[in-house]
Image (spheres, rainbow, N blue to C red):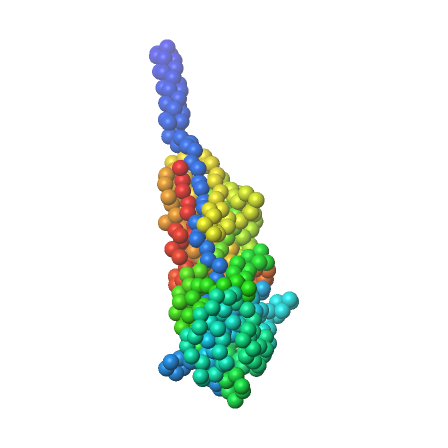
Amino acid sequence: MDQLRKIKSISLVALLAFALTACKKDNNNNVAPVQANTITVENVLQSQPLVESGTFQGTGSPALILPGQSTTITFSAAKGEALSFATMYGASNDLFFAPSNPGILVYDNNGTPIEGDVSSQIKLWDNGTRVNQKPGTTVNHPGVAETKNISEVAGTDAQGNTYLAASKLVKAMLKYNGNSTFTLTLQNTSGGTANETPLSPGVWSVSYIVGGNLLAPNPLYTSGQPTANGLTNIAEAGDNSALSTYVKSITGIFTPLSPILVVVYNGIDNPIYKSGALDAGKGLTPLAQKGNADTLATYLKTVKGVKAVYVLPAPTTNVLLPQIGGKQGGVVSQQLNVSTGDRLAIATMYGFSNDWFFASADNGVDATQKGDISGSIKLFDDGTAINQFPGAGLTQFNLAGTPLKESVPITAVPNPNAFTTLPAITGIIKITLK
């Protein structure tokens, strides 16, 4: 009987040992295999040099601005950006009024908005395409053709005709409306002078400033160079349609992307942000406002379920610049080791904003998939800084400003939004896994 008990005991121990061995083997089989996946992020935006542009005109038909009448231009601008415009001296063959390039600066060196009379910055220019007759109602249009470069008319033209200073004929008053927006009022003050003239419908523009340099420092004309892009139609006939079409074609979006934050995680929700909630104060604010992902990356490395965190700066430039003049935009890549069940999310700042950021929508994407995942990205407002026109805000960090605080929930940025219409997100940022 004792012998039987011994045999049963030995058998039970052997059975348990076998079962444990089998369990270990099954667990090993259930461990998800690791695979290599490479993420590539590109700034594919075909950038434009003008942040804003538009037209202005009088109220009549034709829409001239007659002596005593005025018109307004409302626009946004960052420090260092300038307003340019062009309008025909109507009682001439091919003269036009415009500020000297790059235009009317609207902030002083301290970043204080400029207000008041800025008429002295307006000049009178000869388009160089028609021989000038004595200005007045007897001018024959279009007149005799000539081929000369654009030149300033300072008192007299090439034919000896005389003119008052442009500031005596056109009055320009600048008003700051707050939140980086201005209104310029142009008044025709030529009435009763020897140079009485109507002003034609015109075109205006504001150039982006990048790294302290304007992308379009001569947006509508260049002194000493031939006229171009439809300016002749304004200078000779007061027709602003051709120049308007041109400036529209070079007006749009310019923005870099900050170093890309990439997170691989498993078993948790997207750890970068939560739409509809306030910024959690874990480092998303410096990413969204300043493009600095380091604080958030450090925090994410402590979060249970986060498997890997990367911050990817572009070589030499740090930020991923857009396509400029046909040159490829910034590109970064990173090899990832991922397993079945892993999720992937990214975040990067819309560089020329107050606190907008691109991020993976909802709970990111399957980290093991292949192909273009750009459609999974949305643009969000972090809700921590007051918004201004993207690329034309005095308090935007990447335009040398200090963001103005607010505290509202994180939300998707609508398109069109209160400031502009953006390209499709897939036309700004491209993300592939392979």
